[in-house]
Amino acid sequence: MCVVCDHRLTVSEEIICSKCNFHLPRTGFHKNPYENVMAKLFWAQIPIERATGFFYYEPHAETANIIYELKYKDHPEVGEVMGRMMAKEILGSGFFDGIDGIVPVPLAKGRQHQRGYNQSMEIAKGVSEITGLPILSKVVKRIYFKSSQTNLGRWDRQENVEKVFELIDGTTIHGKHLLVIDDVVTTGATIIACSKELVKAGDVKVSVLSLGFAKS
Image (tube, rainbow, N blue to C red; front, side, top):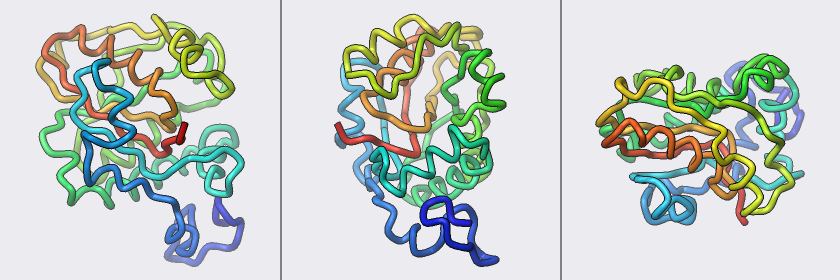
């Protein structure tokens, strides 16, 4: 069944039907990857190169079911399929040019054990399949999970993720251009906190990719 409208999929469709795919509120940020509203969240915060989200995420909208199914309803395959779809669509724009590897935003061990998988890793798998970029899952870790970001404001979100990430292996990413992947970007606080650890490796550039972008 389509994760958006719950109608039966045809044999050629995966996760989302053609009609819902056609009406998916795409951001188009990859066409102007440095000077869009999402990229501006990271200006002066991290050495940002490019940023794009695939579609506008609005809680309780039908299209938000893509995120809900992936994140809360035990459907990791949604991440991989949507990751492939997203990568195919933006591949021709040059968004991935010069990027050396993918860093999925890590979950805390307890949180990942509870969910059974990391949704950002599932998205990264799909993107990696299309782009051929390696996934660098051992360079940064999440030390602990404070609380969900869902109902927090901008400043509370930043405080909630401050110092929750830790660089493990900086030697493999020194001088690299990294693509940080998360499921949804709202204020950018999680990406910023994670990237601040990555740049400690030295001479690191960051680009950001997410399935959803929540308008503030």
